[in-house]
Length: 198
Image (cartoon, rainbow, N blue to C red; front, side, top):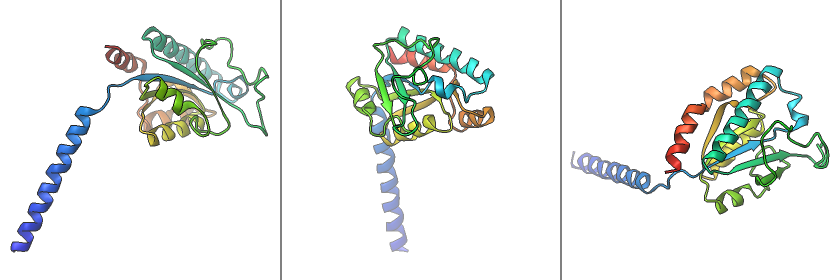
């Protein structure tokens, strides 16, 4: 009986210490410093996207680019190429379409793997800009976007997908990803950026 009481006391003390430690961590956590990461909106890959999804996706990607710029937060553009399959960086297929409102001075990352972090300078770039909260849009929802999401989590970023601004070759797959990852809508992102800018 005495042994059980001591064991219960040890467990209680451990649980209280853990809870207090978690509360302290939350109090000391850094405020959100957002960045928008636009992934692989390249001419070659856009041919795979259903027309309606492409129209909606491009509209919202531009809306988010405009929103992040208006709040003074970085817009990072990511491009995919493969030494074996392309698209070649000097080709039209490699480029973003003209209607995407990127600027030449937006930081640019070129990747050869699904994750935007693997063997790129993205993590370094974000840390140099003190960014710790990433908002992902682009394609493919079931490929490079989700891979980048998991890599960002592994690197301790707060990371969010943006509703109606991610795309894939299959609308139902995209909807499932948005649901599974609780993709944020425009209104929620606007509110978060408003708070982060204060």
